[in-house]
Image (cartoon, rainbow, N blue to C red; front, side, top):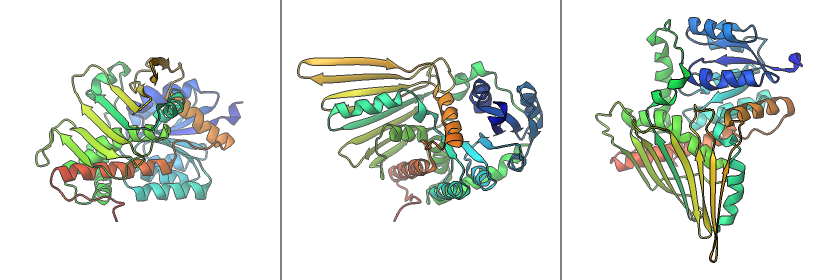
Length: 381
């Protein structure tokens, strides 16, 4: 029934909205209806609203979405961290699905978690990889490997533009660059709280690559039932000069003890001319190994692939499984609706996002040590 659909306010109409969430909301039109769109560009907002199957209100201030009685839930897709809008949305009585990163600090994440509990509203972080259908079988297969020895995370990240050239993203031209200044200053202030002692160039790594991309790898580890590291024994950003950072992101490499007898090896590699985004988690044990390869984020036809190799004396069993045609992005929206309507538990919750943030701070501190810097973390004793 139309009147039972969740009324959505979309805040931020950039790449992820145009390429992913707005098309998926149309696919799930039996569960959602977009009633309000918001972007700093009024021109872009009106263009997007004109293409929606519903009559949506248009605004340039996200506070107008929170004040709208015709909105039940908000999707927060603005650039950078989303803590202030998510917190205000919950306090306004809205359910919230916020793109990552949720917040720059653990303190903010805990405040958001408390606000959701006080308001009795759903707070979901858009870690779509946790909802991929290949994750469940991969988690189940881990028990067949014997005592876990090594977890290896590898990301090959090309330049951004080729990944979404097929989307033909529209940009608003009626936004003053100064409109972003206060948000950037807020994030840098919070980064100084999160990784005290880190110079500006290292704070930019934390705000950009760590929170913007590596957070996905940690959330995926949690979805697989793997522990997160409390400390990194080694961290390096390369190539990277703290006094003269380059225009491109540095590659990041880290090693950590997971506290259960296994070791984490993580490599986030920026390869601007590499043809495709590639991401995998491989887990090794004495009785076998698994490899979970995740799809690129903007390619709806790509699917996750799970390879399981088990050994039993002289017999080796190899199986390869591929995910179906309902993408992880669609499944996370379905889960959001289920949590709102039926009270289903939130998989990608705020507590998990706080744990990811703590691990990313530890990774950043390890890179600082490698540079000879005294970089702390928000959770350090």
